[in-house]
Length: 278
Image (cartoon, rainbow, N blue to C red; front, side, top):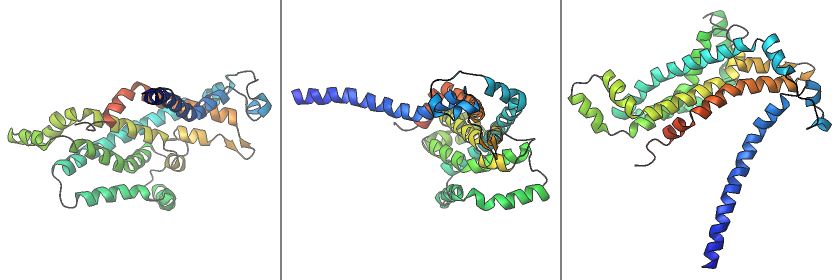
């Protein structure tokens, strides 16, 4: 009996300590990023000034006054929002058809869509740049960035929505058909309200992926449609990296998405566990 009590007490202490340790390890890079953003570029590279320095807002002031942070931030909001909306407009009907009217090729189509995520982005960079610059004339436009962000996240959106929709009993959809509800009515009035948690979490994750996308937004834009990823990439020079300014820009870039995730965490967890318990 004493052995069981000791094991139980050990577990009560060990698992919380382990959870906090893992959490702190994951949080430490963010802490260090924010911490470094209040140092000058000179102080940021001096190990002897690890904690002994004079905090400054110079990096943030420089970011807003000289680098036009708000223009990049607005571009990120526009492209991420419209790309997420477009992915849902395409993904919801596609997932609905695969979940409630599947064919013998449905699984093959889902696997094919997922396999497109395995394509190295560098393999299509040159043809993409060549076509958008010389033929389509859409290089460095919001339209191009929105379409690209939508397409690269669409397989994940369809897969997630398909998983959520499969948890809804077919009898509910069939009852709607018997009552004369149209296909659009089934999606709008029956399916989305029942799977709202899954749809919301899918939209949130898609928005985060679009916001964090750096490879395509850096290489398909120059000034007009440049996002915060382009602003971060711009803090490089032949002399090296400006760690103070780079940390400030990175903090300002991840700040909005961290705040969004914090306020939407309940909805996100609810959506990600949708259908997990029957």
